[in-house]
Amino acid sequence: METYQTEEQQVEAIKKFWQENGSFIIGGIVVGLGGFVGFNYYQDSALESEENATSAYMQLMTAAEENGDKFAQDGEAFVAAHKESSFASFTSLALAKDATSHKDWAGAAKHLQMAVDNAADEGVKSIALLRLARVQLQQEQADKALSTLSGEIAEGFVGAAEEIKGDAYLVQGKTELARNAYQAAVDALGTAASTNPNLQMKLDDLAEHVELTTLPAATK
Image 1 (cartoon, rainbow, N blue to C red):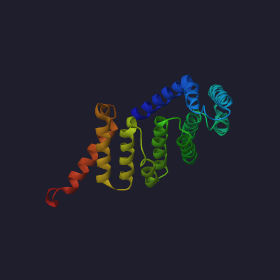
Image 2: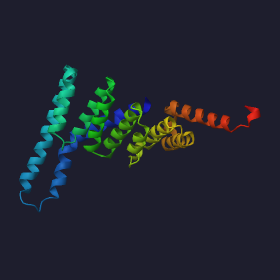
Image 3: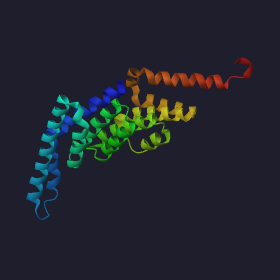
Image 4: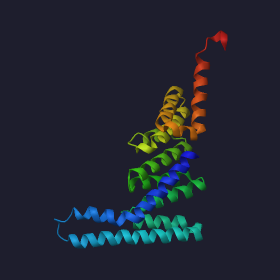
């Protein structure tokens, strides 16, 4: 749960950053288009679009708190209407979380893939990839989970990614690869590994398993 909470905190921090700075970032990007015809119109349009998306996102979240039953429908409509917004991926993450609460793994996977595709930055993309891999494990798709995590993961999420890889290898019966992945997770997390006792337990259990399987028959 510690890893999941950290992801939630990361998402909230990124949301806040984009809410406060998204318009300025877009403004900086479009400044580079100054040589093109219609620059002023494009700049105004881009800023207005982001501001409108921000307002629509806040309304969506407020409405979700008041009537969660409509969130899935309203959230999908928001993503369809604001795919270019920094908030599209946040909404997809929320939709995936709602789907998992109903054990709708296929729906969660769909929303998480949308979050990956529309990610505002590498941090959001990495969070979406981690959650997608976990959902794929729930769907008994270990191969897909490993494929999902085969791309580049932001530095702060490497430890979590390696742990999920270990889980996938374990499902496949590849205990040595699983142990290597768990050890890589511990190494990547460093001192933070102490906040994830489940990870150390997985590593210890595998080490014990390997030791037992390598003992001479007479000593077993």
